[in-house]
Length: 153
Figure 1 (cartoon, rainbow, N blue to C red):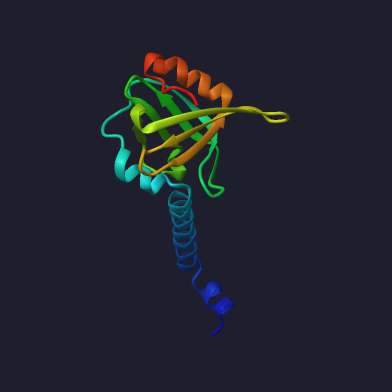
Figure 2: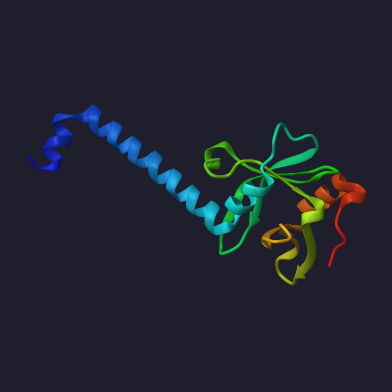
């Protein structure tokens, strides 16, 4: 019996196997992005406990280290305690919500000729994990953080 005969004679089992494979592959890829980008290291130190109380906006984009790109799947927020980061539910495996204290963040603002302004947060004084977001998103966060916003470099 070859693979095609098995699939033809067991269609429901084949659907279960394919579904398990797809879910496993999805979890594997999101875990790799968490490790490569630095989210894993951040959540070991800054995992949010309880609900976030502050201003937040969803469907934002950001880049972390080594080409880890979160395109329109980030929820970014801020309050007096720190910077809030979360991802959409579908990408939540190995990406729990974070609250990084402002004392653990350095902020650098840059302007690129064609791409406009962007801001890089370097998070974790001992980790140095970058997160680059648009200047517009950063302005909203700065307003929510108020006097707690770190001095920009």
